[in-house]
Structures are given as structure tokens and as C-alpha cells.
Image (cartoon, rainbow, N blue to C red; front, side, top):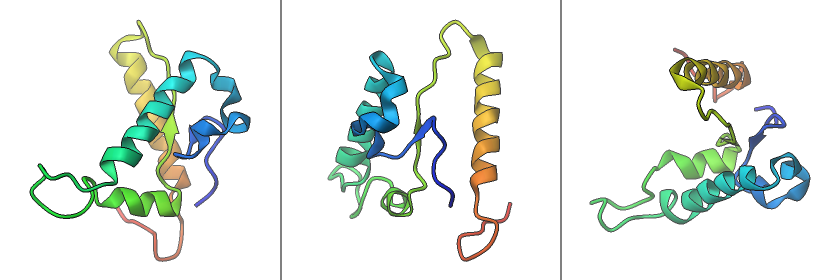
Length: 108
């Protein structure tokens, strides 16, 4: 899998000022908060879940493979069309980043 683009961050990146300098101020708080939540809740067992293992079993694997990315986007007052356009752009980027060969190839 290719490295994350400049505006996509791995969970360790919000702590790296060299990777997140463009998110100074309020733009950096959200990726840090989400990264902390993933590390402290999503990747760990939860007694209320009713089964052993992490809340989301695929997340530790995605972290190991460096395929779980964070992005900071601002869509205030944009409305549904802007959000839909943003999500379609994210979908295109993720599909382009998908491995083309090897054991990790998925078919849709």
C-alpha cells in the first residue's frame, strides 16, 4: 500500500508536528481525539460487548498494515451536496490506493 497522502494521517501522525503542521490550532484537535479514542477504546476489549477481543477486530490489523488513515475536513455550512462530494472524493482516493496485486487484493 502506498504511503498516505499529505492530508491523510496514520494514528501516530497527529503527534508529529512535521506531518501535521498545516493543521495548526483547532484542525489538529479532532485527529488527535479520534486517534486517542481508537487506541484506548476501539482496539481494546469492552466488557459490555459480550465477546472477547477488540471492539472492532479489523482495526489492529489495519493499524499494523498502516491502512487506517485519519483526515481533517471542514464542511461547515456546506450542506449535503458538499458532504457527498467530499465523501465521493475520499472513496476515489481509497480505491486508487487499494493494492493491485498480492494477497491483499479485494474484489468488488
